Image 1 (cartoon, rainbow, N blue to C red):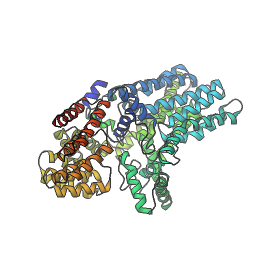
Image 2: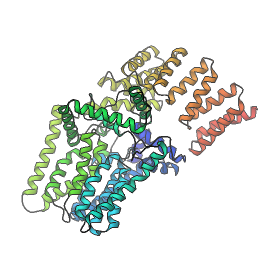
Image 3: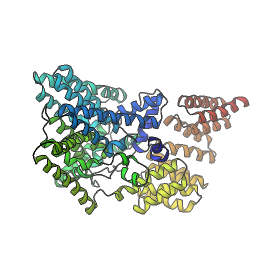
Image 4: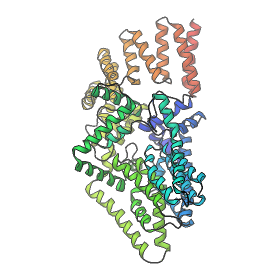
Length: 614
């Protein structure tokens, strides 16, 4: 199934959005560049794991295989925790339920931190359960370290710290305050490396990662519906967000931006939004809560149900149970089935904290996912109790959970909440962009047209379809679509770049230059804009400017081998052969280091040509 998935699903072979961010960062780490020029922009552990795999020569399939192993390991830990907290049968049933849940299963086939965070949070849970047996400072310290490491996979897990530390204080048999202090100190020590890295890179105290205020803003604004809503003028690309937010802060305040100041700037916007209309804020939080409790289809990056219906993902055949369906079972299980050994405050915290995170920030399947191990085991406890324990209590509770779970899904279908059609345009747009990146323009055009039938003003689909039509030579229609995309999102550098590239293909190089310069005014690090502007400047007989932009492309992405090739050609044509050969030598070395044999061969051939010509 893994081979089939990687072969037939373009989403598996071509990382997008956050997946592309992680995969690109992993390439940087694999290349030995372990320290960047920004603080961590997301939870830091996962990209380093990917970097290690890439450094060992592994690719996407290796990652997916590793994540499948991680999910199995998570299930084994759930079984062990179930044994300790209940009995062996509940443990095995909990592990089975977890493996049958669709979200953990599909997460194995994503370049996202989900599988790693599931394993990390379950290891922390297991460490806490083990500490109950050991009742030693070392065991409590291990619990703190485990939860601290889990925070490196999901920054929102820092909100588990207060309830877990309180639980330790209540659960220790002796020297309770000291035990809680040891766990807290160990937790802080585990988080400290990320804070130290951030301080080294940017000179500011950021405990784990940047953009907490922006993330809060994504879920709390005048257009919010409980899910992700992009902030005005800020890219959805993690690599560009700090550029956009710094520019917005400077324009609004006239002050020099810092990471903490920008974070506070967006956080203050949210507080003002809440204060302006508290009832609206409460209503929005309730809507997010309902997303958490009922959502099956929505995905901010991937949409498993649409992938299944499109024939792209067969993981559903092995793992068909939605997380939302199990939540009523889990809640009633935690309420009614008492663990044999201790009270279940820890399990409640591990369920409630992700719920609160969603209510405060915004709903995403990824934000709910840390609760999945507890949901699986608590659901199993209720199901087992209804089957094997005497009396009608558990049978009644099981029937009630089933009625609530089914009732919620029927209600959603009736009122149109969380319907797949709502996220289908975004899904088909992303799929179209992948086909376009792979040069499959006919397939890309079909996906963009499908997206526009569902959302005629989807600017990304308009721009994508416009670019596809450029490849077919239908320039007038393409320009109409591209201009429409720019009008809908005038501050989107991607759309301006696509428009400029279209003008260049038509031979309208001055118009192309204007659009590409507009794109760079929005994002000075836009690689495609620099690359296209370099080619445009060559056509306008301005090779020195072309050289400048090709060099900028290589500064942004040292693995941009096409830019290196054209830069060397341009320098050689200008009579600067020594510089041209130096560029090619660096590019050949880079291609060899990144195991890109075809690029290395092409670059070496050009280098040989220049050296022979000399």
